[in-house]
Image 1 (cartoon, rainbow over the protein chains, first blue to last red):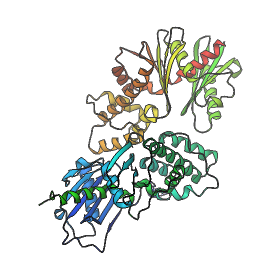
Image 2 (image 1 turned 45 degrees about the horizontal axis):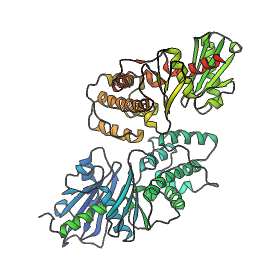
Image 3 (image 1 turned 180 degrees about the vertical axis):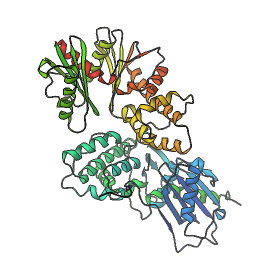
Length: 294
Length: 256
């Protein structure tokens, strides 16, 4: 069978959303948080500290356009325009390239703040697994950063690592988690931390007769181990919460939390939005201090 | 006396036939997933190239990550010894050797008798191995053979922020979109990996004369950058450097 177009297994769904019960007209403060990451970008619009609309999409090759595109995507189903925004904060890897930003705040601070918003004031340890980095953050009841550890040098355990693997095994990335549990027996984790070497190892395992699901399980297990070692280094204080795209992958998260012996808090918000949400909240706080536009 | 050295590497399996201290035949096969088959194919190629019969080979030295698959080996030679012996064989004045393969990089310091004094290995991170260059060649959609020469034509060093192969791919794609010249990107790539290999060599000490083995030594972009960073006049590279460890294994087999 010849396929007309090669399927992109690593491509996750780009989404946006508007709260139908919120009216932005007549708001005291409309704030905008834009998180430009190396893999994905999000825009979150808050109306008086409540999430009104958001957009989540792949970061293009051009940071200023990524910020504009994410905002456009978030505003798509609304009548709101950027000129009505009282404060905009840029965060993430590409934060200096957010043309409509009034200032920047680090993604560490934004993820802690966003996690506090999504999960509540009992969160003390936040794990953010994004496209190209893993962050372990200790915070207080207000979502203020106390300590953090980051790996942004190595793809092992990151979203990019998972994208590469889903592509290798031709499994849509959204299905990886579920399929990794459809195994009779949990296989050993792949021995290589390095994604490039793990790829070779995985192909070898397939040749040896392991099923795709078993190889997925082996890889998810290795990723969980990698993330766990970062958490161990900073120490985990309950409650524990996870932000970033990897939170959606139960293949990795399930194995991680089992190793930790600790269940993470739950949220109904899209975990990829935490950074942008935190940024929008920082903007809201600044507006209260009288620093808003106009 | 005729001996063979077989190096079953992560990517390629190399065989060398040595007669009375002289290389008389070489053969290479892609290792793939059937290591034993690659060993056999590579050996048969080398035998044919040497114009001899298999039974004329008295001893076989086996080395490489797939050494266990070399069933016919009469002696197993570890990679550090293999590359050190090879360096001494090709260049008796050498005291330091580095071997960058497809998935692993090694460096060793040795004395005038070829005894290893210290060694360092990178086997954990693809960024310090041939896998890095291969991945970059794919990202730049440029054949591997052309990539090195392209780097030499650049006199504009730009930094590559990402160490990781996976991240560097994204960074290179970004550079391409920003209309950066391919030759400048190529130079950045070669500077990056040269810098990592220099770090590896520094761990054992930069002691001239320095020998470079492994497939990456074919790449002029890499060797030029390496020489520049090491600050030495010359780096000694044998003909067909990817056969280095196989030669070392064959020489060790002859000593038995």
